[in-house]
Image (cartoon, rainbow, N blue to C red; front, side):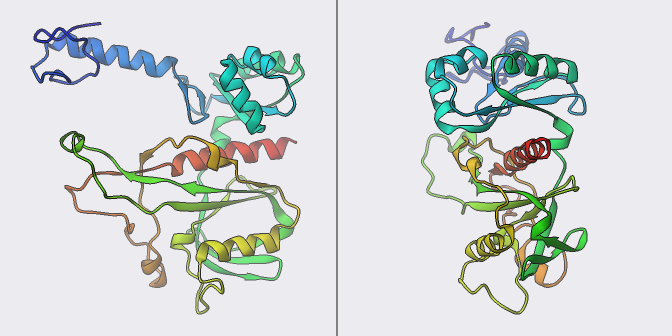
Length: 306
């Protein structure tokens, strides 16, 4: 690893100046740091449960998902290449868990066969299937055992009998820290969000409900809370449909937040800018919505294959 010519400390990140003393770095040191960072990213395993990072195109990658039930922690540690501590946590969490992303179907099937040979239940899912964008609902009402929704793709009826899986979870939001602000504490925070995904039989794309951007028409939520109201709707129509809320236990993987449908502009029938949109010099807003959508996508892939 290259070192700073002034303080002789290793160049920890690819930047024009030393992270420690601020001296300008030679070009070869910056290039070496960038190459080292790229290698670490390629070999690392995501703590958010997305498996090993691979460089193959998303259209070719396949996900290997395992069912963790009553296996011994030592067996999981050996099969999934985990530490004893991580294996014990996986066993405690239980249920369907993303093991890894393979470069292609052949690699995924080989890994699945290895795990099945040891007694694990395994599912292989194309990553492209898990990353299909949702149909975003902007408003609607509950009519008996169905939802009459307004979506970005037009009116949509969701029958309770057509549901395959409901996935729900919290969305974390925070400001991206800037270098000038890292040495001073900030009391600013953002309100957390929430999402519901309704996966239907015979449909590839989930229907996404955002309580913070959902309009109920003339009648306000009876509970006074859009989150509680939508939860009640889904409890009414879902019946015995599986409901997955395990996303709340995953460490958040934050990315740049995109624009959302603003509830106020939805009342005007237009797509407005997000209520999170701020002035140009404000710090960027991060959230884990992309992580939730990916989690929801492969969980539905598992249910389709059961």
